[in-house]
Image (cartoon, rainbow, N blue to C red; front, side):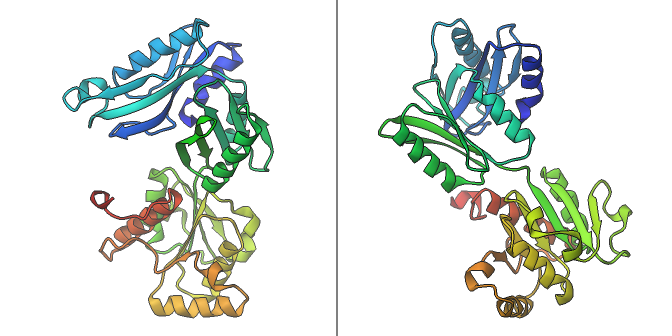
Length: 344
């Protein structure tokens, strides 16, 4: 959805209201695009996005044209592809995608506003009717799936997946519902402008994170070491409050110095951040945990800290340590164990 915002905003600004939306609501086997991928078609024939990067898009467009004609309210075409035909159809490894095609709902306008405001937002789509349910970060709910009991159940499942990212089809007694949670844009805050922080900041940018590096040591926090990255000079507790951090944040503490570590970890633990990584040996971890316990934190709270930090990929130079840290942060964000794909 985020990739379509520019085109969609332009169409809406031009007063174009007759728009069809195609959404992948389920994948089986392999596919190039995940569930939640969308493609749009307006009555002027303009297309935005893709559901397959291949000829499946042509079939989806034909279904969307049917919707634009007003002959139906919703269609759910299924595209299955054999391994032999996979490349020609754009599904590079074979498999199948289930695509829901529907008319544009004005509730999408609210969804766009929340995404652009960088708020986490939940969105549910019933697969047998053109109805939607939207939950804002403040708990307010707009729309309905046509059944109060269904609304309540879907909202409960949505909260289980909060703050996202999440895109999954659910089967309920009242019917199937595609539930999505759009997260805040990910932010990577690195406390400690060390040698590891340099490649970690670079990799974080490549991975789509907004990156901030903070340190109270001016000699480390030099602009030439972190080009294009926001920097904050000062002690952790002087330049941040816990309220600055949302669920879309990952915080990594690299100081290896208690006078910096404890304030940084305290800020992180008192916030809603999804990931807290802390560099240090087992002894360092134990020492800092003892200080934090003495400060009033519980064992359950300290369990949020990933330390020693990173996935076990081997390698001890700064770039490989940074890679292992970022990989762990991404895995936690997506609720994955971080193991090898062949062992899934």
